[in-house]
Every structure is written in C-alpha cells, then in structure tokens.
Length: 414
Image 1 (tube, rainbow, N blue to C red):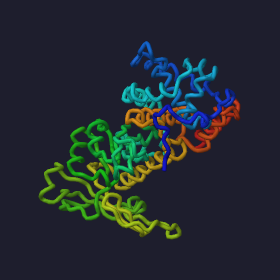
Image 2 (cartoon, one colour; image 1 turned 30 degrees about the vertical axis):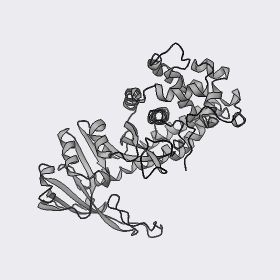
Image 3 (cartoon, rainbow, N blue to C red; image 1 turned 90 degrees about the horizontal axis):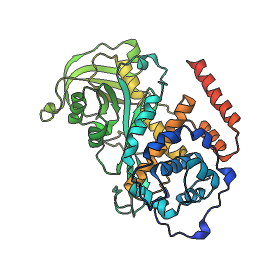
C-alpha cells in the first residue's frame, strides 16, 4: 500500500532524516524552470506567510529528482540548507507551513504551465502513417492512486479502501501529457473528459470504459473524432462493408463495416453511421496470463488469442491505420507505469485533494522536463542518471554526455 506523509506536523522528532548539503545539487539544470515559476510568486501572498507558491512548487519538483527527499519532512529539512535557500530563494520553512501550502495554493493554476510545456515538445512518433494524421492523436485514460482511510474525499470501494484518480490526456505523437485532473476514485471518467478535455480537431483513442454512444456524439459535436473499443455484444445494423486489404489483414483486421450503432432505444444517442472494425489478436502462448474473469469494462480474458471491436467515425482512414492508432493507446498505460513506479508518484505528500493535485501536476512537469531535455520518452536509465546528478554522484559533464548520447541515437533512428 502506498504511504502518505499527510499533513500532521506533530511527528516524532527522532524520525527526522539528516540531509547533507552535498546531497542536494543539480539546481543548475532546473534554472530555466525557476523564471517560469516566478508567475506564481504573488499568488495568495500574505504578510505572515514566508513560503511562496513558486518556492513550494520548486521544492516539490526537486523532490521528484532527488531520491534523498523521500517525505514532506525531508523537504522541510532541505529548506534549512543554505544552498537550497540561495537557489530557490526560500527561507527555513516549518512542516506546518508546507502542510498549509497544500491547502492555500490553488492546484488548477498550474494547468496553463502544463499546456505551455507540452507545446514546446517536438513530435517523437516515427511511424509515417501516424505522422501523416492531420488531427492530433490523443489517448485518454485514468489511473488510481491509493489513499489513506482518513482522506475522506477520496471515495472508492469503502471507508477503508480509498483512492484518488488521475485523469490524463496524452499526446501520442509528442508523448506529452496535455490535460490532467485529480478526482476521487469513483468519479465518472466520461464526464471529466466532457468538462475539461474535449477540444476540436483531435482524434481521441479510448479503451472500453469510455464506450457510451452519447459520449461519442459529444466528441463529434466538438468537431473531433474517436476510436473506442466497444463491447463484444454491441448491437448494430450493417449498412455496407469495406474490402480488407493485405495490410489490414497483416495487422489482424477481420471485418470492416459501416453500421448504424445501437439498439432502437440507443440509435438516437449518436447521429449518423459509425465504422466497426473487428481485429484478431494473436497472443503468445508462452506468456502465462492471469486467471481473471472476463470484465464488461476491460474484457479481461485468460485466452491468449481473442478478437475485439473498435468503433470510429473516421471513414477516410484505412483499417490498418485505425488499428495502429488503437495500438498506440498503450502509450498511456506505459506512461502510468513510469509515472507511478519509476517517477514515484504513489507516495502522496498531502491529504487534501488540492494538495494531491499539486503533487501530481508537479510530477507531470518533472516528466515533461525530462522529455524536453532529452528529446525522448522518459526512461528509467535517464531518470537514474538525473538522480545521480542531483545526488552529486554524477558530474554535469557526465550528465551532458548521457543526454548527448541519446540525441545521437535519435538522429541515427530518424
């Protein structure tokens, strides 16, 4: 179970970690970020408050890059170090002030910064068929972050099993988060997308949890498109069928049809015809699959071979390209794995929903910085090298050599 520091400053002083100044460096690599954060300096300014929003954000971002900082108390102790004070402009800060900051400063003010960083990224996608798409290709999904029972807002299974949920939109071509929201674990994913995520001229790719016909129409009303996995027992009336090319067959397409989707009671939920593509997935029999029962939402199966259905409004694309787009939806699952298991965003520093949102948005900023620095998707090896640098174990020259080697690899592959 994930651990949280919470927001209680009354902790055992004997548990206070010792942090040496020589284990906290690497500020030079973050120096370009500090001017960007300056816009938050005057937010919720108060004559009794020593900690400013931009300083709080810098401390949280530093937490993700330096493995010495493992808790809110460790962050608090780092503010007593002169190097940190000089580089971040922060004064020695109490644990109570850090806890208060998670309530006082509005997490949603970080949304414009996330969009600005995402806009700076160059396309990383190498597949020419996906690069040729005129629309932005965006994968959307959600993931749970385990929460403490006392986090009453984080509704999930019951009072002892609580969770926050990160809703994320990932630009597949740039491998950059472009939208994010934090809610309780039971929040309706489609409503979050409707309210915050939907934009024009975007091709959205969803898994089965978003298969709702009215939701499809909402996307079309925004002048965007969708590719969504639908239930195996979905009802439709076939209007016509498309010829399947050899390229389509090679990727597993077994059916390509134009249909009127839904039973009589559902046909008015989406206007106009929809394209249905059936794909056969050939699994690896040597890989043992977990014996989990089939789920209406995720269609889990113990069989290594199975078929699944995709619904889309894109009549102009080949079935092969639509299948490729859906394959790349997996990029968001890989991002969640990186985000929680490697970047380390399962350890929550705050109890409030706003505090969790600030931490998650700062984690996204940290991940985006790595992509901007390296010109590649963030990897465990690169993240380790950055941590060695922030610990003082690797020199700036060694870090630059690592980053330059990544750029050389990128040039060879492009």
